[in-house]
Image 1 (cartoon, helix red, strand yellow):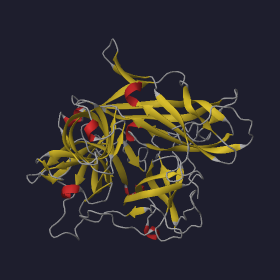
Image 2 (cartoon, rainbow, N blue to C red; image 1 turned 180 degrees about the vertical axis):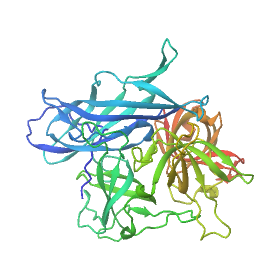
Image 3 (cartoon, rainbow, N blue to C red; image 1 turned 60 degrees about the horizontal axis):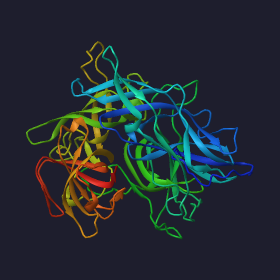
Length: 526
């Protein structure tokens, strides 16, 4: 099955106009560069308008019945699929992202809970940006469009004469056309959502001739705003295609399909495709190839949701943690940036951009049969120094997904009484963190492996320092390697953030007890 999605990062090529007739398919990918202390900024995207070089006549990156909600704060320094559409075969050199109904929430330590909704004002007319290079749509072929929104440059806070804080949004974004490579298609693309159907066999070949062994469809961008004019507020449903090392020819990078954690496991519990349950929440990393197929490199299944039983997935940053004398988290508060699937409009409901109280259940002694909260992390591999996500490693600022049954406050309760979630499972999520490089601790002979200290700019970190560890697989963007990092330079780091309560030695570097540790998959210098 073909996953039809439009890429907001514009795929640009030659700017010359062509007279080719017919239509092609455009995938739109969208992402964001982060900003400190903005917890949520979501909008209803009503159109992606492309202007052809030849003059009159517009192309549209979204179908007319698609108005997905997109939260830029949920895709910091990452991209996902916004949608797909058919467009006339043309060269397109200008683009507009048409947005409405903005909601913006910031971290504010003076409030309880520490969040504040700020009125956001969009321009009356969506600004037009150059698509550089242009998007080239060829008859019968698939093209990629990439859009990158710069939240830091786009949002300016102002105080009105009456003392009200408002956010004036002057969008800054880059449109670019993407050329599909044989090995990574239109580039690394994340997908996050819940499983709708499973296909356990396939006769389809990827663009580079690798056989797919099966697929599952996943709903992306779960609806979070009321539908506009009857149009669905959901994002696309795409087919996540899997490959194997056992096919002929074998896949160069076979899909790793990881099942839900069942206890203290450091590595990925392999999940046979025929046991994948619909309604399960999953995180996928892969790419869309030149034939329009989503090729999964890594697929992580966390838990099965059941809205009828009031069980859902809640994603966002931890705002506070309560621990016992042994350092185990007994309760924490979570900002709900995302829901999988949406339970915003149910009865009872959990509104987006609110705070819930999460109650983990401690593992009994001996373990099972008593129920307990399962902990896992998004990479499902053994970490250096034996780092492992668990009840002692929860900390403010971590991005997590909590899966469990929610209970609304009793009728008539004050606003200080929060919805509670009885956590069946808690998964640490990979996320982007912005801040400053402070000091280099170690650098290996390859220039990439080592460690340094980092000061995150988010107020919720309260000035805490983070020890960052990199390895030979870490990607460096706009900087050659560790030795090229400049003190006080602004960095965006993407990876898993742990709290090490006990202390340890990682690759020869001493980590003191009570330290935040980031395992960085990417280091971007601004």
